[in-house]
Image 1 (cartoon, rainbow over the protein chains, first blue to last red):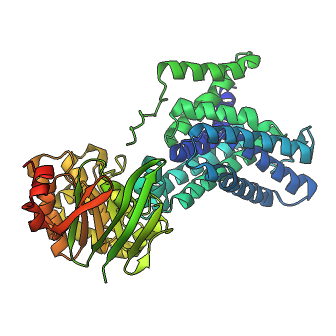
Image 2 (cartoon, each protein chain N blue to C red):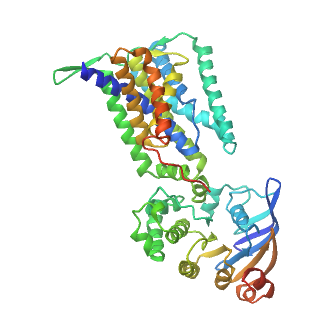
Image 3 (spheres, rainbow over the protein chains, first blue to last red):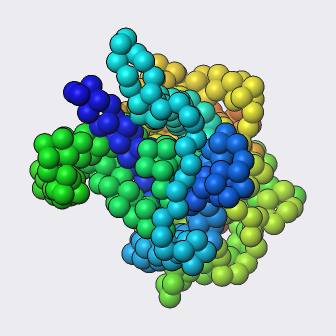
Length: 290
Length: 235
């Protein structure tokens, strides 16, 4: 039982972590809390539903198309809604993000209806035997995929030219321009990577909860946002640690038989962090930009 | 033909006119300096040439082609680099990563070669290449900012207040390096409040006052000019 609960915590935490990574990356580069980020997951879940349940196609194709749709959606949202406001006050772009979120949720409701759709299982394999223990395959897969994705992301950000450009832009956009870095395409790249991770999160979420609904991204996105703040917004390891903490907090509360309190506990965590350590676990105080 | 030619440039920030119709030229191989008090429009001029600010009117031509309307990162590709006021190194990245960013528009092979040259001019950067830039001293950060700008192998290097906030001994060192870079073939446009230093290294100079050019001449001429001495060289 204990192992199962730990695995549940890891699974839920991994999904929050993947979504939180997108939040944190976008915040890191343009200081925007992209409240539409959670809704991108909803788009990914619907694409999986469309491909498998409606078109009856292969689950692998569903995964690929879901991730691709989320990636495109993220870049498109930036180009259409945020890029024109690059020099506007931060509040304008924040309000725009909330608007995009409502647009996506209501758009999905208009197109797919308000009730939840059942996303078919991506795989028939539901349990695997590890050392005499029967473990949930989706849980194990979720954890492995998240580890791989996080390592890959860290390598991209630390080692590749584009990743370094991302860090440069996030520290000083003007100086980055003077280096010959195309700031707009670097921002697009950031949205693409963050949204691709959300796409992976969407598949893993649909695998665990087998549902797609117009507002599914709202609570998921909000909790991932809490995870990002908890870890220190702008920090990649912070997003992962924050995601895991939120996931475990929920699982522990549920295991204690207090599942009605699980959302409240997550937000309580947020309040505690904001009071005790507003920069989050890995956050550092922002450098004053001159 | 001048390497850089700026004609009747007007730039404003909202209702405030920062640059009011200035014209100047830089020829290949020269060190040209713009001197003037705080708020004279020196940095605004450099930022406009670098493509960070849009002018109201006027022209900026580099090697006979206009730079106006060109985005900042394209201007770097054309061979113009600005080492900005206040250094603005990427404090959370290492010295080597900062230099790599400076060569962003070039290939890895080209950068490898340029990097060696930059380390020759700034041996201290080589010693500290693995160190995070935020932990460098002010003088070292200035060297890094200059080295970073050089990584794009600019035809024209624009330096905005390279001596700002540095101890006199470091100011001397920075200006020695500016001289060396010029002798090694880089044309330099220097903006300085330290007029004495700037005029002593410059081939030619322009004196800016409230957004207009008040005087121009060789560095040596302006060093002994009565008006310039009174206004900028402490008598």
